[in-house]
Image 1: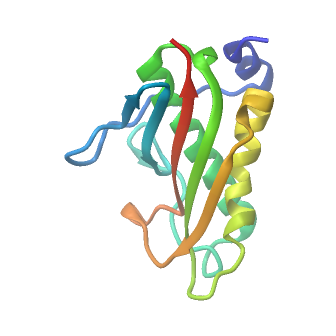
Image 2: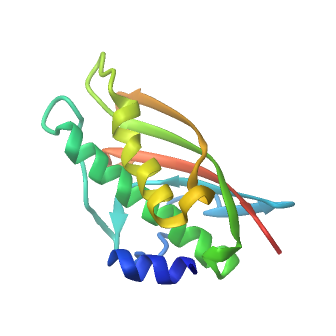
Amino acid sequence: MKTDQRLAELGIELPSAPAPAGNYVSAMQVGQLLYISGAICLVNGEMTHTGKIGETRDLAYGQAAAKVCALNLLAVAKGHIGDLDKISRVVQLNGFVNGVPGFADSPAVINGASDTMVEILGDRGRHTRAAVAVTGLPKDTTVEIQAIFEVTA
């Protein structure tokens, strides 16, 4: 099944790819690897998820935030390569969770992104990963995620 068909089947519409917020690029392809800069919870210029997990926000909120980040990563990839079917696999996700000091459930939060990748891309969405809690993220976003995709020509 084509990725766009799968998105439609799931009722998911990718957001517009967010523009870089500084002196960097959103995506860079080196050979068959497509590196995507950190995606935050920004959709159409508005923050969708802010705040620290374990303080004012719970695990489910964090997982929803991670899903927004995953969709932003796919939107950036699509903008760069034109067709999500060119993603042959998700190589790695690096997830950062805005958490209270001592927050130990960042892997459960980043599952929101991992599950989204597999739900949309099937086995191509399985990946290696890091999930780290930090004490602050840009714009007080709840989650930020970087990605590396393997792509075909």
